[in-house]
Amino acid sequence: MILNILSWASVLEAVFFLFPALVAVIYGEQVLWIYLFCAFLCAALGLLLRLLRPRENTMYAKEGFFAVALCWILFSALGAVPFVLTKEIPNYVNALFETVSGFTTTGASILSRVEDLSHASLFWRSFTHWVGGMGILVFILAILPGKGNGSNVHLMRAESPGYSVSKLVPKIRQTALILYAIYFGMTLAEILLLIICKMPVFDAITLSLGTAGTGGFGVRSDSIASYTALQQNIITVFMILFGVNFNFYYLMIIRKFRSAFGISEVKVYLVIIVAAIALITWDINALFPSLGDALHHAAFQVGSIITTTGFATTDFNLWPSFSKTILVVLMFIGACAGSTGGGIKVSRIMLLVKGIKNELAVSAHPRSVRKVKMDGHSLSPEIIRSVNSYFALYIIIFAFSLLIVSLNEMDLTTNFTAVAATLNNIGPGLAVVGPTGNFADFSVVSKLVLIFDMLAGRLELLPILMLFIPPSWKR
Image 1: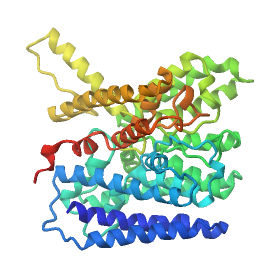
Image 2 (image 1 turned 180 degrees about the horizontal axis):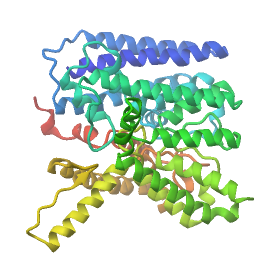
Image 3 (image 1 turned 120 degrees about the vertical axis):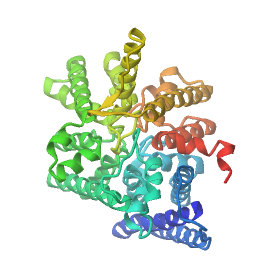
Image 4 (image 1 turned 135 degrees about the vertical axis):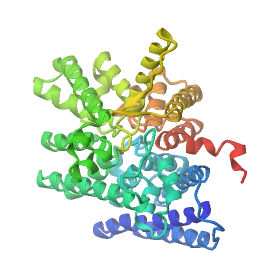
């Protein structure tokens, strides 16, 4: 059954390879034949796996975790092949790092000059963000017939970001279609606005794909710095919008405005953004010609970091320590659950604070009975337990990764923020891996650890970790 899902994923990636092939046709690039070959390779693998018919179609939680983890690994492994064949990234580990960074919407790169890539490869890098932003399996559930039975909620739960996933409508396939309709509509709106503001069409498309997936791959080495202030402001707004829980947009569409604006996570998310922009603007005001310029760059970087997009308009590595500390804190907080953003998620932070407050109250009044609530609903002990387990696993993975990466003997700021940037799917960190740097100088072992972190962070830890637990391999 898992191999059957992998077959659909492989065929789907074959279709996706046709898009950069079309770009190669438009720009008359020879890499066309390489992308067509990769499409053929994926299609052949998918059809071969289709020969293995599943005995049953019921999907349980364990199978959901395994299917999601293996799909993302397969997608990344195959998605790296064009970079190697075109010799634009000849080293496969580097190509895999770049591709995993794309699909997990991290935006961390090993490239020093992205302008050296073909238009087809630049498009493929940005398109991986768009595919990974909403999720590979969510896309399969949305478009393929017969893949929307009730048990497949385990696939969506294993892939979607957040502490819990609920269906917007009774059927999973309809939920997936609604999510992708909102996703596509917002992406198209950003593309049109950027084109109206006189951004080149290719740049508008690729940057919008990166913004929608909150990824961060640009088509210029200076990221977003060389575009106009108006174009940067549009990207700022859409980065923040894509970091909002998509349930908010669904409720708005069906005109349940009170329910939409009653989502406490969205309100806390916006409050954090406003507070961070105000503090950083005050701190960096002296570095810019005017208060307006300081506000502009502060808003862009706050929106970029908290949504884990990773675009940059300036080298914030040169900002005062206070501003950089705020940005590092935002790296860990992340965006809302149910968005395309990464990080720990605002909802988990809220639940952690509520849990601590509840424990303090119970300690003071041992006989009292208190429940943790979110948006007026009491949360089950299972949700609280899962959030606490997530934090414990997060700390263990972060510490273990930092320990291995530190063998490169780079400075602590570089190592710490490199792990934070990959595990939280952000992209740039500080020092060597800052907005003007890259991850090329890390060893092969460190890159493999960071690749694991990117996948673990995007899939909320558990699906990837399940692959390393032998008891879960049993039927």
